[in-house]
Amino acid sequence: MTAHAHDHSPASAWLESRFDNFAIGLSGLCAVHCVASSVLLALASAAGGLLLNPLFHEIGLTIAIGFGVIALGRGAFTHGYMMPAVVGSFGLGIMAGAVSLPHGDGNETVWTIIGVAILALGHDLNRRAAN
Image (tube, rainbow, N blue to C red):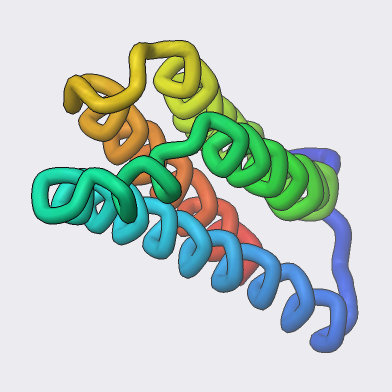
């Protein structure tokens, strides 16, 4: 523990754990979306075109950043460990970089899944540090 660690109520710990669990689930859904988009693009370009819309990815990244700031930032403040926030931020950075890649060539999907996995690891580390 560091000097920044605080004792908090069971309700507060439960809420922090829920944020991380939800964020991990959201990361999993993102990975499923990326794979499904690629498969659907191969099967039906009309459906794939809708799911590969850049706006869809930009909104998803904005939501992921929001949950990252809330869950990972709050975790770093309460338990005092920066590693989960650093790992999660690295994953978010990879995801942000992936959004800038051309859509449809597969590279965006690969880099997004790598970023999502690293972000989920950051949330898991945050959840473990809070316990």
